[in-house]
Length: 245
Ligand SMILES: Nc1nonc1C(=O)N[C@@H]1CC[C@H](O)C1
Image (cartoon, rainbow, N blue to C red; front, side):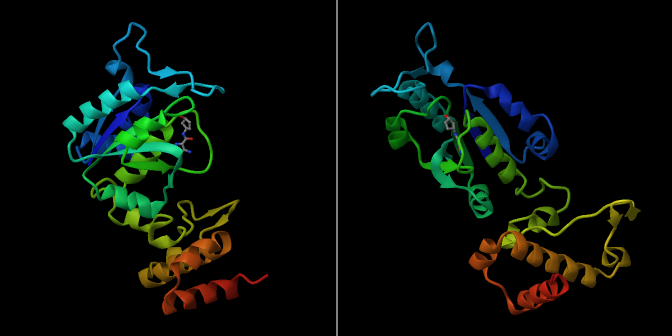
């Protein structure tokens, strides 16, 4: 998986490359990260990348030409990649979208700043527009990092245990079950006994029941969308019975 990011602030991406799951995955070559600064594609002494909006109004808009030249240079280096622009006007991404993104050979992520990018650049050179949520940030860099983090951890070998990603919240359309670690008894409470017992079938049922119950309690919309098998319906009924007021 190759990622190319077009950004005015390439140093911000050290958050991904210098540590953690993403840092290790990049170091091991499971994914590649290349950074491109639109200022390197300007030709004036001030290295101008933005200008005032036509029609007036606050803020600045990113100019077409430096971004066009940057995209052309990246497409030449990454011919199999598609261009995605991060913006609040884009498709709101969920885990299913991250799985789709992870299945592609590479992405050129355009991180905007200011009020955004001249619409003509988007129409002529952008393949997809993505949003990480219905709120407004000061730049597209954090959204680009959110997408890369969510996608890289799905790549084979990125996580220590193959099951980790499969059991995360929103995988299989459910929230994750609760987690506990040592010590077994502390002032905040004790670990559920089923997790101590070593009966793996019972532990698996408990975890599935908790995931279904937690989703029912906190995100009934996800259950609506997903539907339940007979076995899952039974487990959820057990949870509801045990948690009636
Ligand atoms: N929500 C989002 N999901 O992706 N990107 C955003 C986002 O707020 N972008 C900012 C809007 C103006 C600034 O240029 C960057």
